[in-house]
Picture (cartoon, rainbow, N blue to C red):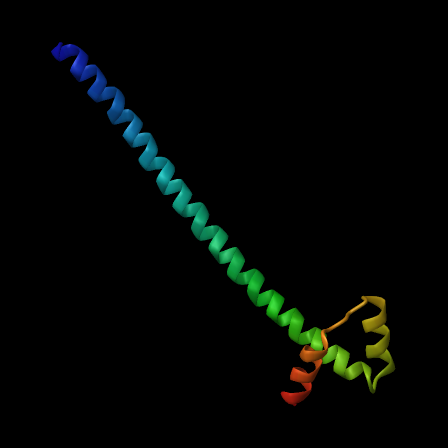
Length: 87
């Protein structure tokens, strides 16, 4: 009886150890993903700002207009108005 209890204790001890290692790995991956999401958000914000500026410039610049047309950049009207208001 005692031998069986010890065997179960050892078995579950290894399972707990494995679960703790998995938890640590999950935390590491979560940190990596969180950093990548933050970088993606920053990149998205930068590209949105550049797109707004490019659309505004396209009203007066043929080169800007060509780029906007080539990449099919479109902004919602309120984005354009907000960009104009920030000037």
